[in-house]
Length: 410
Ligand code: FES
Ligand SMILES: [Fe+2]
Image (cartoon, rainbow, N blue to C red; front, side, top):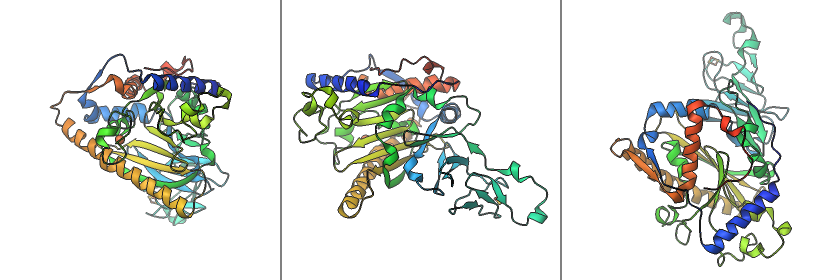
């Protein structure tokens, strides 16, 4: 199933949303979902359901694996696991990014370490190139006859788009990136991720992946759960804009606070929209379905936080990978400031959000609370579940083939 790459008039679509944010901000309104949504609590605790999600969702659709700038140089590599699949990401000497099953084709050991030029298996020393080809084996004469061509690493299809490395973990999946994105990448392109730099990276353990990502999809909890950190004075309201399964959420703009902030929509509202800076129209949190949040911070030093929530093999395991990017290579005070901000965000997510999810998980696993309720004001979570449900049943993206390429709202 393929779609042609979408051409979207990004600027006019961003202006339209900015006007909507402004109108709601002035009226102090949001646009809630039409009703509440009840979810069977076994969605968070049932191992068979989790395996279906891994099979039909995480393996069948293109996933963000990393930011391109994390592997800026040839020979740079990193390892990760998604749904229990060990993955080796590497940029080869021609600058092409690859994703491989991190498993030596001799007897399966993981290639944990690499050098600029090649990967050597820690078990018996077979060696692979950055392109995943078997290039040497130990005791070649005694091992037996094998054709090196048949012993390359298992490779996953990879594309780089909008400064992100995308991969599909089931090479037989027919879902292509353009069908999946329907032009959403054109909005992501405006962040210019290609030119950003990796500043900090944190990997936080969590429980069920949906509990972990749901905390990114509503602001309802901010003043309560985060009362000791950034919660006080923070709005608990969110405006939602949907683009197929993807979405964007943003707090209504505060007309009084932050007028010093040049990207406050109230401050630019009187100018003709041709003069509105793109940065003022893209702020907030962007969600790439089903598990990635990109948070644009233009205050406190320019930075972008990418949070990838990756499921583990078990229903009660996930990891949140926080990747903090900055516009420039930083030194001195500026460097310290970004490290402090990353420490703070790690603390908030691990000690407040994920610590709460762990307790939710424990309680939901008893099976005694039969359902959970998603409010009208938590429309982003409703949207996530609607699309999980849609895709998990078939593993296909049929509904997106006729997507009108326009923002929709609850
Ligand atoms: S498992 Fe890798 S060399 Fe034996
Ligand atoms: Fe939170």
